Length: 296
Length: 307
Image (cartoon, rainbow over all chains, first blue to last red; front, side, top):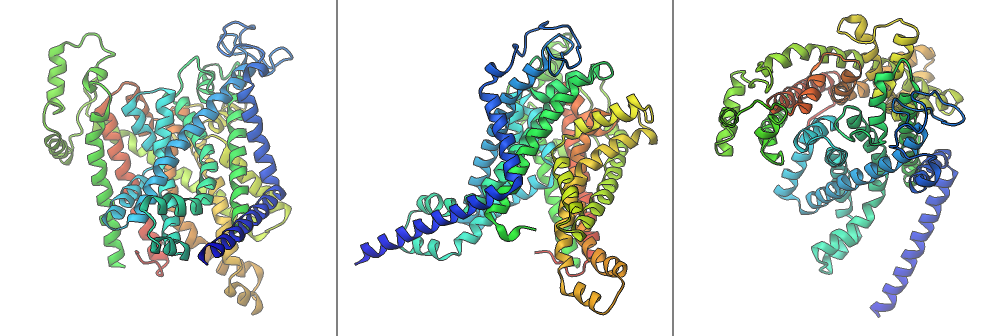
């Protein structure tokens, strides 16, 4: 008797979920922000994958052209003080940017979500200790946490990625924690608990899938925050080191030739701004599509 | 209210205490021997000198003893000396701190004026081209890295037009860094203000004010802006924290002689006593100013209670 009822309710649940997803997709596709944001992100991904095909020169090869050439037909973004082609460097830099964004978000999301899940689910002193630690981290800026992490680990692109990842953990922890508290009081969770589901199953099979939406939104905007923070660290000399074609490091190197060759600083800055804009627009559009009531 | 103030102060003290523990542990988290790393750049240091420094920093003692030693020194105002030059760390930080505060507070004023004005008018003209233009400008503004914005402003106003100096520490030199830092954050404040103003504008008391025939300017200034500003004051604490963080980067763009610039130099030199002092001072300033601003908010809006 129980079996058919479960089957019916599961299939209707699936149908409802498919319908929800369809509506979400429709809302997303209607949004101009989503279209522009997704296009920018797509261009970034394609550029990163096909960098060797798109870039006319090796990004680190010296003297591919005359030094400090302004943008022209041969060197679209001009050349730098070593005669390297800036367009090729920016194209290859997209790989580093994407890599930094995804790894840093991966670190902060994994740790932050775990902390939020555990704190919200277990409760008691574990909750107090974890969320108090998150509050303390929250009261400092991400920049300070990232600087402290780089001070410990030493300047390099990998360490900058780790530092940026650590600095954003509190955001994910807080958002997950808040969502877990809401889900814990819902009927489905209480039902799963009543039938004796194990803790791990309750956490990862029941709670996690239901709180993924806000996490995805935070992660999308998180990529833009990570790209900004990591490029700032590289600009300060604490991230990627020369001759890496990382955009922040390129910008820093161009400062010495600022008066004579402003294009060395202009193009990497534009590349960072456009990338960050893409992820911000996509994040905004996702937030609105997932929660249309919040739309203003 | 007294309960709120007490709780807020206690939470601030707790945060500063956690920072002191973190700062003591910091040097132990460094992969390898921190003293060797600190002196790696100077060839002339002998093994005896290195051992002497190790004992000076207390690194040869158990970690809890190091913590109490460090705290004892901190409470007496002794933050140690720099690795190169043997200068007192606290003095170096305190000389530069007013510059950083001046930059952060000027930028905060710019952020608030620009951000709140833009957010207010965007909400008032909701759905019009004006709103769309302002909010498009805001999302573009959020996406521009502050260090790049700073360099571009420097290129236009210092190099091309020659109106403002490139670097230095007097008032004229403050304009570009403050505008850079202020504008970089004004974008996000304008978005927050817009959504909070939209909420205020749809309240019943707004309809009542209009229904009783008040002039639109009075409705906006007495009812909308006054209520909307409560939320703006609420943002001040968090925005100040962002300004302090942003100042670290902007100081390095404009060679502004603040603690952020000193921090980056000391990370390069692996000067751990200075890095530790910087983190401690930075955290303390952020916590203290945030408490003051939060209390200001509680004073302005008596509905607030600590939960």
